[in-house]
Amino acid sequence: MKDRKQHVIKMAHQLFIDKGFQATSIQDILDYSGIAKGTFYNYFSSKNELLIALFTTLYKQMEKERNELLIGQDPSDIEIFIKQMELQLEMNRSNNLTALFEEVYVSNDEELKQFIKIGSFKSLRWLYERFVAIFGEDKKPYLLDCASMFMGILSHMLKNYSIAVKSPHAIHLVVRYSVNRIAKIIEEVSQSGEQLLEPELLDAWSPNGKKNNQAFQQALHRIILNLKKPFTQNIGSKKQVELLDFIYEELINRQEPRLYLIDSVLDTLKKEPQLKRTAGMQKLEKFINEYVKNEK
Image (cartoon, rainbow, N blue to C red; front, top):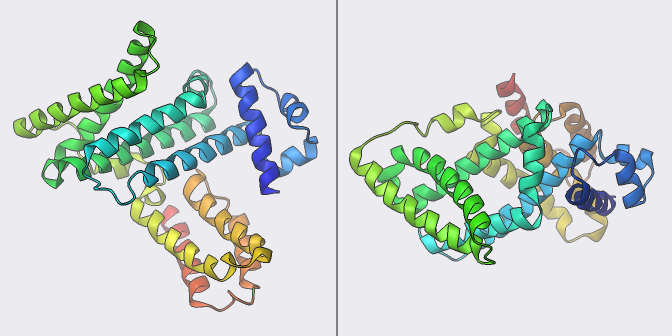
């Protein structure tokens, strides 16, 4: 079922590239992907939810590849950061994400706008944390300002350079130029002591700030990973792994996690001989209860 769902997402993505999101109907998606309407609604409650699933799939892939560039490398190496940014921008280009984002921006759809807004906060937080690793803890008070400036510099320079110079190396040249500029700005701003935005604002700005917090994500990831261990070597245990992944996805990537579904999945998992009455399941239940309490 998961493979078939990904097939629908992939087919819809191609239609969105060819026709645009607004101009693509659910019937277009049904015809192009070769599925029945009932099957579509088993996977997605709406075309919006499908688009969110597409964005989530692409972001997870980009995040995975971006993190792989850091394996065995020095996080403070600015050359690794340049490669990460090139990867991110190349994925945006190849998947036509800028055009899709622009369609969302001009729409009146608050659900999609909110999803994009949360994604923007995540990108800003990631940039800020990378800047801390690269430029040092002593410059931390100024790095949210600088991360915001870098996003603006990179976006406008890439747009204008691509119009002016039809170069296949545009992304590489613009990223390196923008990184060199922000490195100088960081030095100047930290010496002047000027600050507009306090880094603590990142938590205040982020909707569901706790679940966007890296410590929260890492803690949940560890719990889920430990619970999956008894099933990873067993091909017949794919269902249990998918249920655990579902809980993680709901809590981390969904704007409003469907707690009734999470409860149902937990009940199913607690019936598994390898999991029922284990410390890991108790820890997961406690973790989710704490999350629900904090979100009220």
